[in-house]
Image (cartoon, rainbow, N blue to C red; front, side):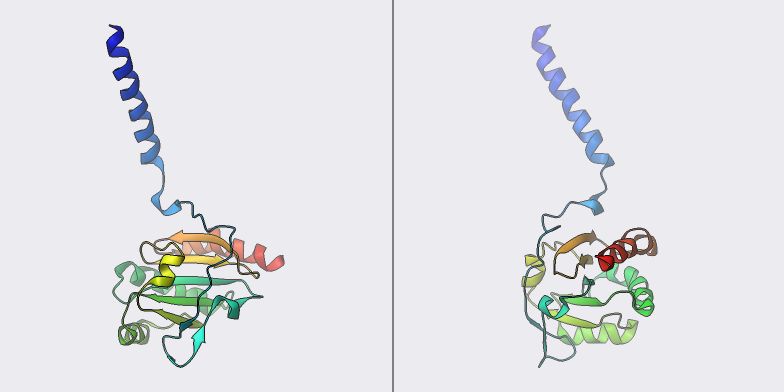
Length: 175
């Protein structure tokens, strides 16, 4: 009888951990970058290859970094939300065109509209890797000092903007 207690105990523990895991939201994966300086980069701009953009250019203001690509189906889902946010003028949105072709990215923005103050062109995905991106879209809220304050995995919705992102931006702008 005692020899069945250990396997039974292990089985029950596995069921408990499985139950806990099934209740977690995969979009709320904690990022090790939260509270740390945004990784530095200097990339060419998508529309103007002769010009560069870096996080240093954004110091002094709260801003969003939105990682997107023309081949990304989920990016199409969130794009109208980003367009609406850009029209509000509450926060500058910097795009990171990730593992894409320059002409494909430009054509996609021409077709669907451009919510970005500027888009950086990350053709090989190196900067995305530095930010811990493992899929697009992903959105980061970065404060005035260049510190990452939030990471949103997947397409942002109007509810995400209104309930999480805008309140955080307002709080960060007061600081």
